[in-house]
Amino acid sequence: MIPLSKPFIGEAEKAAVLEVLESGMLVQGPRVAKLEERFAQVCEVKHAVAVSSGTAALHLALLAHGLGPGDEVITSPFTFVASVNSILLTGARPVFVDIDEETFNLNSALVERALTPQTRAILPVHLYGYMCDMEALQAIADKHGLTIVEDACQAIGATYRGQAAGSFGTGAFSLYATKNVMAGEGGMITTNDDTIAEQCRLLRNHGMKRRYYHEQLGYNLRLSDLHAALGLAQMDRLAGFTEARRANAAYLNAGIESVVTPKVKEGYGHVWHQYTVRVDGGRDRDGAVRQLNDAGIGTGIFYPVPAHQQEYLRQKLGPMSLPVAERLAREVISLPVHPQLTRADLEHIVAEVNKL
Ligand SMILES: Cc1ncc(COP(=O)(O)O)c(C=O)c1O
Image (tube, rainbow, N blue to C red):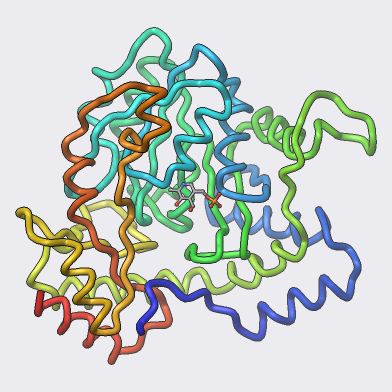
């Protein structure tokens, strides 16, 4: 089976983790600081704050911006549910805006009509490693005094008009095992704002600045040095990984004819966390998945149920209709695009997809 994703664990990763074990300094040590430095460089921001997951990064970023009960945050329904849960965990209310069928991302033309006096923030999700229309979202945010917290969990290294994901607002990244750069588990907050960075540092470690002197209420959402060491070894591979993903996506786009392939607009630097096609026109998506799996091709459905149709969210927020997200949830199939694919794997994927 050609797996949908395959974490790359080389000698550098193994040696880096072993070195931490032998050092005896397992948490919040020098590798965490180094990983933060590397992330800040890649994202072209002043600060990066390492935390234990992408969910923690989103949650703390929203808390640091003061989001809480009575506030509304605009986001996409077509995302991993962590984007939405992080809003709910602050006590704020998620407000869903439908997506664009070509980019799978928030339809920026629909955002303004979803604003209310309670709207405080926009949380765009750069799904599959493809950035949202940041110029339009930034203009809306500026006009209405809104905060932007980017869910860049799938988008390390992605760009919009040459500017890095995570540098438009406060950014949140995931280092989960299948991500383009992984640490097993982990997350990162990126920002140019000194106060937000300081708040995130306090919130991740029980509000502690000086050892056992606590300035405020906080959490334990720290990253371990073991994870940071793994992440650092991966950061050295980021450029190569991204190049390989781009080449694989270009090969698939050139060969696949039977389904709708993903297009990238001018000015966007896609990093292909997922390569996602659409089985459109009411065709049998689940049958297509079975056919591909039987032919030895791993697939993923991201995501089969849009957030507003998850039962607990439907109960909390009430029923709503977001037709594009609902249709794409029935049409999408993600195919392998990871850097470890061989030319033979790619040829096999193209041939089998074209039999659908
Ligand atoms: C779009 C999106 N947001 C948030 C998250 C949450 O990240 P984590 O799993 O590291 O908590 C993920 C990761 O799966 C994601 O893909």
